[in-house]
Length: 99
Length: 163
Image (cartoon, rainbow over all chains, first blue to last red; front, side, top):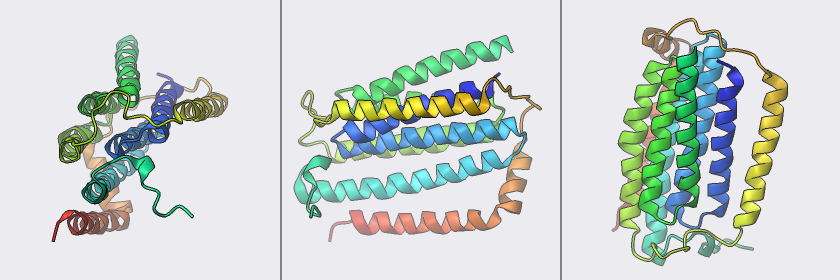
């Protein structure tokens, strides 16, 4: 199998994640799109690990998974807090720090 | 090789379709389920690449924990959402343009850099080798990751509890 078929699949997933982060209003959906992007990166890491026959790619993918778990936990706590304070998870309405 | 390519094609088609629905669907719960499909597909891709351990960690951590966590998030923030067309903001076309640009530039660079180089599989990469790598070469990042997880846990509790 070609290395590029995995990299292209990851690029498609990453671009969809970019679209989701930019176009979605709901905070939970933005988090899901971020997960999509992290997974695309994981595919790249594991594919290059297989390409170079090096196990470090898998190790890095595991680190990314651990950090994604931490990110989702904190992100959901923040969204929950926003929801509690404003009764809405619309990210466009959160502009208190606008200059 | 043919079997692997067919499996890759099926997985990739399912993942791209589910990912597209994930970022376009009007229903948040369905988006979470589409995310589960994409994550399962990624686990399949890992298996194709001979990374068994990462594939199962993907299933356990992502599908088992993160999707459930996101569903809890949907549940706890349910109230004002759910109206049709309420999930996208008004910069959808700009976002699509940016995403297409990202995809185009990535694809061009990848095609230029890696062309038609093939992955020469040397069999499954053994879990023992992965653990040697984590607890040998990368033991310091591993410890940092555990401290980070603890900090994220404490931070999430401190943020989310009401007092």
